[in-house]
Length: 114
Length: 220
Ligand SMILES: Nc1nc2c(ncn2[C@@H]2O[C@H](COP(=O)(O)OP(=O)(O)OP(=O)(O)O)[C@@H](O)[C@H]2O)c(=O)[nH]1
Ligand SMILES: [Mg+2]
Ligand SMILES: [Zn+2]
Image: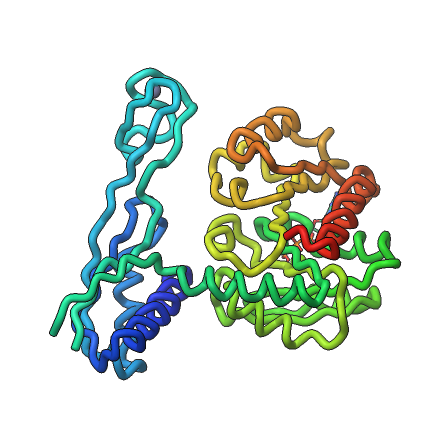
């Protein structure tokens, strides 16, 4: 399962932060997830709940997921548009010379901890 | 409780592990090639052919599979060192898992292949620590795959179009496929091959030899 792999990496990132900042307990974890990152948020939350109880620093943590909308940039007309609604073809000019500008990321934005 | 701004991508620690592994392998003089494709595109068959065609090279293979070990047995039968890495259900190899597999290899290899899990999506998202990402696309899969799985095409230094002996039976437009791939990744090296007839294999093998030599010259 794809989500479990991401959870393992997330836990490692948080462990490293906990060590650098001398944290003993992480409360809230705010994660920014791109709309077309391929991450299923329900599966992700389930995987996290399964994993966190096995991790002392994380066992009481709550995951907050924020969605980053997917935006595509058009090379031909220099416009941007909603990826999910229009796909690869630019609705402004019909060009296919388009690139995903944002929406595939998975970023740990901030945490609440002590 | 205090608020700490992290702003790190979830795979940041993986990227660090990957860089460390790459440097370690460069020092050892081992070129690591991450082989990625959909299930059944011909990875094991291609690697078997390369091992037979390049007896002068010490070649090793790490077979990542969700459960079985048939591919590792196939490679071992050819006299190359092979190990099986079970991913315990994980759909991709990450740098930590790759480093553990590298440590489990006994002999030295000039050219070490990682046969990644058969899947065109997740393996592309993780840097394994390889010097070169080589993706396979087989003729029966269709020439539209660059449109559907752009990330895999963007992350690959070499695109091997396999099973070209099957071209007469499929409506696969080779030129259009290459054009689509180059649009996503202008620097990609494309090799149409048939591991069955051997067509196109010399060009791919010459490329792998040249990449291995680049490593001795520390050009990575
Ligand atoms: N016609 C033809 N068939 C091929 C060629 N290469 C591989 N095959 C066939 O394709 C099938 C799958 O090949 P494998 O080498 O096992 O593919 P794989 O990518 O290693 O498969 P997984 O490890 O299961 O993902 C086998 O039946 C091969 O005989 C080729 O060049 N031409
Ligand atoms: Mg195989
Ligand atoms: Zn446009």
